[in-house]
Length: 264
Image (cartoon, rainbow, N blue to C red; front, top):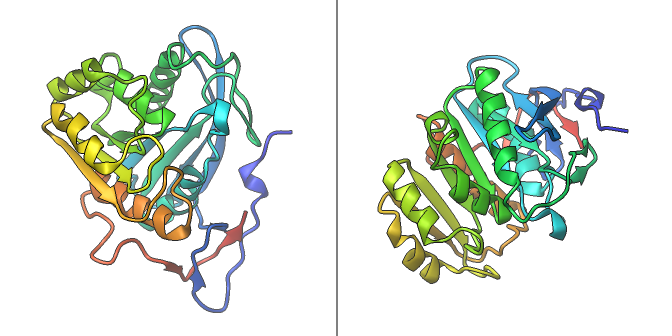
């Protein structure tokens, strides 16, 4: 059975709540579906601010599904739990073709990043049709390959503002794709863990020199999967700094919340 975000139960604590991995802040959450150009039905979830305007939209591209990546990979799950309330940011998460999560299974099968082009295009098209503003791709690991390969070419390029990459391996994405991104002129932020398994900060800086507008940021102590609240929170701060006019603030996003909360 597909997970229903309406099943979350919110309560009002007597005092401010420390925001932890399982803390869910208020938002409008709905299960969504969209169909790719080649006819695959993809499943996902859209979380938007409960009130006020949407200042930015994240279209998230998850890690490698053959190695456990899916729409609930923890950084994206925490983004959907927190960012609508803390930063006015909408978060679209979805399973690429053939990927399963508690939300359900998207049709099709893993296609090594080739057929997934249609998945990226369908997600962006969905965001456009829903009127979600200030759209950014956020790729993590395999998702960075999809962002680099398909974000700077049409029909996606004219529909997004830029991209944030988490732990890019640069396996499938080549210098050709980096040069395409450079030519697009769109901003690109690259967060590289110090202890990444595939591409560490010094090498990443060398590879991304082909994209003059890229901001490559090494994160001390972090690993490829951004394990630990310290590192997940750092990622969310950096994303909000990039995609919103006001950013995350001098001290980053709040680590406590005084309103209703739920636990996932």
